[in-house]
Amino acid sequence: MNSTERPRLAVRSPGDLVAAVPYLLGFHPADSVVVVAVRGRRVVFAARGDLPEPGADPRPAARHLAEVVARQGTDAATVIGYGPAARVTAAVDAVGEALDRTGLLVLDALRVTDGRWWSYLCAEPACCPPEGTPYDPAASEVSAAAVFAGQVALPDRAALAAQVSPLGGPVRVAMRRATARAHRRLAGLAGEPSSVRSAGVAAVRTAFRRHRRGERLGDDEVAWLTVLLADLPVRDHAWSRTDGRDADISLWTDVLRRAEPELIAAPGSLLAFAAWRAGHGAVAAVALERVLAAHPGYSLAVLLDDALRRGLSPAELDGWPVTAGPVLRRRKRRPRR
View (cartoon, rainbow, N blue to C red):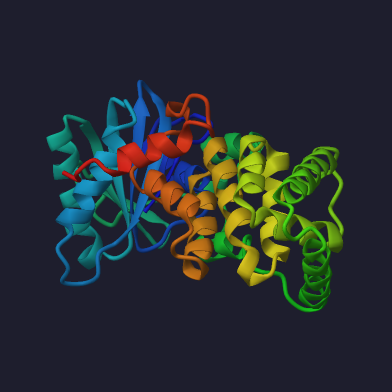
């Protein structure tokens, strides 16, 4: 499941809402159920889950999705299913019922496919014809406002995942050699933890300073940084300096894509944290998927993944990241309802 908070968008019709969803998520959903939550008349939160497999019980995933949305302090929500009716209807019904049980008002329940939307709650042919209502996202004022605000809607989730995938070709060859040089350099500091941490602090500060000036790190700089980030105090220093600014997301994306596979855990987790701080939940999710596929036990990635899945807002973590680990661990120990 992906959840995200994005700049608020005003919607006036189901067509506007359907046009807004790709910008709220960062990509055009397919085979998905999406809950868009509102406070007043403003869209403030969206959460997405995959449609259940044919024959699967949709209720457990629906309850989880409803619990995530209910934590956001919103007033009401609309449920939107993407795909054929045979797969969408049961999932949308289950999510709507689960939202009802949390006390949230369900404003509408929609199905979207092939450039048309249908409402499950409206039976008036004048506004909700049985053949569906065509919509054109490019013609929507909501889409225009989202683009003006700098939001992007990629073609699908695979395109989003590609943004954090490893770079290949000559880049990979150059980074392999640079990482070998970095390991030899690190060997010269063996047995001196304070020297490793001093070098790590310096490398992290240089990386942030360079990227915040719009400069890109060289191969040897990235390799040295990734080797040093394997030291947890160095990683935590980098974590303490990471927030949701665009430059931080750009830095950790670049480092993650160029890092050798055995060294992606720290930069991938830092990218996920930066994206999460910025409200780009889908970016955080794909970064964590890549980290956990290669390093399933990496604690920071596990904690962030759990927070994302439960819709925990980064605004709840005062004093991050010093308190983030304890707060996340405390929440994780709570029994699931």
